[in-house]
Image (cartoon, rainbow, N blue to C red):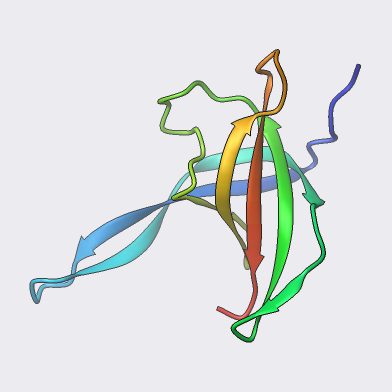
Length: 109
């Protein structure tokens, strides 16, 4: 049995707090590496706060729990100028060979 065609190259990014020099912090994004994934629409898009949002299911090869390269809900994927904010991550099946990331594409940010 074959899995989804992982033909899209995405960059996994994690947030990082950087001191702003005035006692506060700003958030920047740090690339953790590239992954190959299948990106599918999981629901109808909806209009929220004047920014179009598409709900996506992103399937990638599994990464061990605790590894820096394993996605979490605090991270996002980047594909060129497109951003996919990760909402949840889980193993796709009992074999543990793939992960499913539920994400929202954010446009207009």
